Length: 158
Image (cartoon, rainbow, N blue to C red; front, top):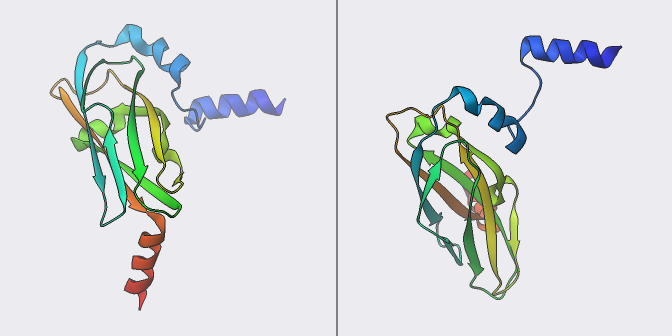
């Protein structure tokens, strides 16, 4: 009895916590305009983190509401294990709510063993509700070395 009541409550209030996944977003495709969008991939290594970090491709033409895949490559250039945080950014800012990541290395910290190279996948789609004025979207990731980030934060506290 509580589950159906909870489902009604969630539907009425919009508090259902659902995230559009591959099966959900195709349902709304009939009511929206599908078009091509150019995605440009950027990467930044913050500070002097000893990591090489770059997108596997710098440009991708995607159709709205269609899942696309790409990846980023990261190499630890040291003889010590590194823990990394990655912060995503979307530009223009008004496009941020329309770029939906399904799978992303930015969802959690990443670890690289000494001199290890990893390929980190990204699966995403651009919602067809993206403003018609936006034809180019920049998806950027900034990589931070966790240990260095914590050290800098501790120095600022003193």
